[in-house]
Length: 459
Image 1: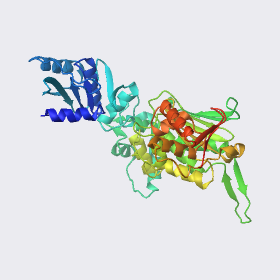
Image 2 (image 1 turned 90 degrees about the vertical axis):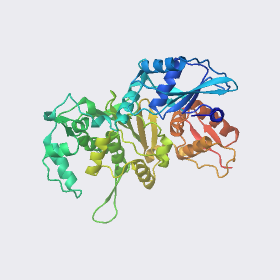
Image 3 (image 1 turned 90 degrees about the horizontal axis):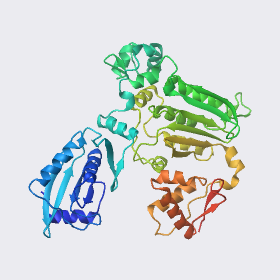
């Protein structure tokens, strides 16, 4: 039972991800309880205004029970918060407490909310589906697909996959169908989404990847698309990229000459594998690969998982959360991915070893884009060679300002949107921080917003 001193301590902490103040009981109280249930649980103090002033709320013998019944009737599945009241300075404060609900998502009047910082966030359809999947600790590819049956996958492709796994040192003697059942790719006679993606025996729009070689942003020299199973697509996309990038033959005087590609092929393959494995196959959008003279853009439906920023990727400060767990695990068995969560670092290292600019990673629209640059890009704009962070910066700089300097030092053509995504703050806050850095003489903008670049000032 909370005491008056406990309430005063809570008020002093202010509203947060697990605490909210309300003057009175209303529909917003129910929305917040739903948001708490869909996130990490929390408490609502009814009788406290948003500034933390104790205003009190009127209660009678039936008020609390009526409110609990209203919460129960207006939530699906029904939630029942714990209710307690405390008197402080002759004013009554009601405490409504709810724990994180095990089966998500919880809704009120057909709307779904989650708690973000100190406010409620209305969930979109994709977020609702993700919450539902997470509550069962599964992913979309794990679920059975009633639209397709076992006859729509190729058992020959399954056998080829078994043979490939055996080449890694495993000893699998099962027939293809038994293998599928043992690996949860087939359950109760039905195939999972993962099985269909991996072994479909026909082209499918679910896996469409658009491929293009661009002379300019509007002139296309060559284009094609692939709709095959995702294992075949890895080689198909890789072959298209190799067809349209440069290869230099270096004569060494030895019997075999050395070949140097425009981009490190190990990194390109890593990008393609990650793109295909981690794609959001529920999205109506297609994956797109655009090859230009000086760069390649890889676009994939599906943003980074919630709670992971681009900066987290660059600093390797995140826990891998595969969107398609069954596909990712199977590809790991095939040796297509070595370790969860380490692919980005390997890509960066390959480009560093090739003395090429660091690739750009960013959330864009409802997807994620990786852009790689060749030495042609550096040669055409020599003034865009990344600066380094100033040797001395004021002690008063905030953590976000330090992060901005670090991101700009790695890529001095980085956009405001990419900085915002990389740090996890709004574009407005990015602008405020950059204006502060400009006023301190630590950063300048050279050229226009689109064609210019950032310049760090070493003091």
